[in-house]
Image: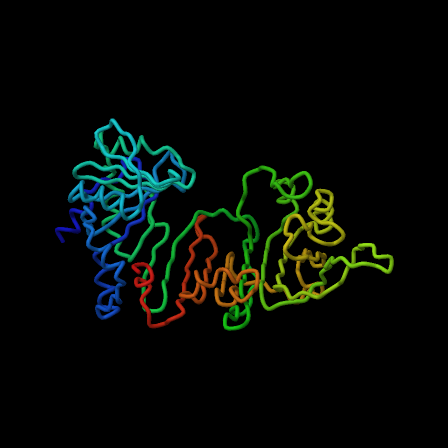
Length: 417
């Protein structure tokens, strides 16, 4: 209980926006009992590295957060320092960080590309990561020099009240929570209504997830985009013009394979010993990918996309997706179908009875030759499913589940190793 209370006294930026709460103590206990204390063997190199004193204390809860006025991809976290000299040695030897000049009363280290920065004093450490190399000196100054930290009592009270394994919060409340169980991670959350489209939803039996299906996405609405021009086609596509012709309902299905003709150019010599080009038509196996878009003006939308160079000769322009050929067609029922399967037709396209549904089978995706490179990254996970419920007071709720390949393994073992 003491460690729990003290963890909230660690410095969180006064202007923190989104906060991720990670209850380190609770997860460690869950991990121990879930795995019966089997943390696995360590290599000689790992054992040698463990001899390095990290120089920090690990509180009962760790908070990762974004800051108002900074990009959402710039993240921060803070930890109490046990020994600043040990910390400096550890960061330099373990992560190859380099010292950076600082006259603010704190030590400053960064990695080679400047995305990862660490600032610390005798008693406090602040880490930051910015994918865009955004300046974070003002956050370091406010925490380590000015001593400014989060004092919003309602926000702090909410942080203390949530007891999920991991929770993402804003000042308005929890956005998403995660629970770890043997063999899977479950999560749920809510987002403000950002969908345009039908208020009622077509119904269909549950999507079969134990087949060759690799990916399925169904939306009975699409997120509202800012009014700008998308950089596709010959002159760009106006979001406003597309939205004016959009009704509702998008489905994307990736399942099995189909054959496409491919031209292969080789060179040979003719009877006059002249080098000539020889074109050979071969058949290539590609993923069977089908997208269906519901429109209130099929002909108008098809004409607009054709005029903009997105569609050419009843196909998706090759420069938009050069890997495969996508054939396009329209139907009397108001659907535009885009598919790698030239024989795909409307009756093959289904609609899921929810405003949003997503399923991805990582095993099946990794079997496609163009995606085989993801195998090492997804070998521990089987599939993921996310579904939402209709909006209530302009808020969509969603639930999801990430299944592991090994149903007896704790997800924490994947995060800790």
